[in-house]
Amino acid sequence: MNFNIIFNIWDFLLPSHGGADPGAVSGGLQEKDFTLEASLYMADRLKELGIPVVLTRDYDENISRTERLRRANEAFGGSPNAILISNHINAGGGEGAEVIYALRNNSTLAQSILEEIGSEGQIMRKYYQRRLPEDPSKDYYYIIRETTPMQSVLVEYGFIDNANDRVKLQNDLLNYVEAVVRAIAEYAGVPYTPPEGSGNNFYTVVKGDSLWSIANRFGVTVQALRDANNLTSDVLSVGQILRIPGSNEGDEIVPPSGNVTYTVQRGDTIFMGNSE
Image 1: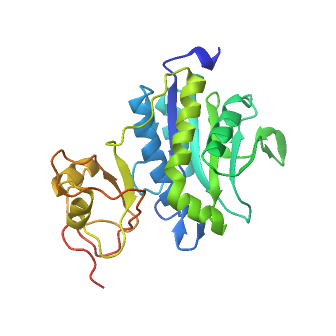
Image 2: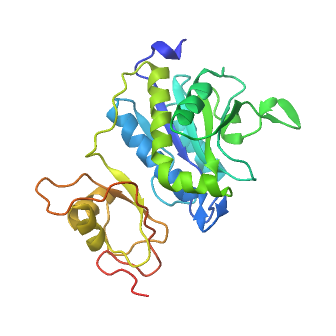
């Protein structure tokens, strides 16, 4: 079956790591935060294009390997018409983006993803397959190996331990993610439309911020932030990522341009930021 002509292709997103597992860490940054931000954004964009999406996690949750695979394989009944995208940030001294694809698949989607990311200014390292050393007939990464028959792709957006990539990841991550959205839409044969300026954005809160100050800064209400993030209390967790809904019509405060990142600190609440 040719995925290029299937319009109702399913997509499954895997924010890697989470909870007590931060993934790669460097310069005070954690892989799990980048991958969650990337996957939340990608999920919203794909839904806007009419592509069904399931996330393995939508908050800073620690998931075991067994549970991650269970959620992946049960999402769409293990359909061969499903694309699994596993979002990652690399480490190890390199620079640029890489895409790894399954031994059971051809390189078409992986190549398209890498080239689209490259069109956003990121260095394109390579797209490739990686084999398990003790059994070269199998894929190296379990999330690819154990999700047959889905088309499984692992995307590395950059190296967290490379100074140049760290700056790019902080400033341009969502541009790279939008590039992946374009590649998926083209591969699935789904008409692509660029994101509207009023769409949701995703942020991690910094020390001293509160939902009240963030709401005022971005021209939305505290209640809108609560609703967008399904908040049921004033307590925010360390590293929590918040959805920022589109500005309310008539707001006097205009949201700042560019991508801003905030990280919630221990002790912060909705109304009072950490004053230290």
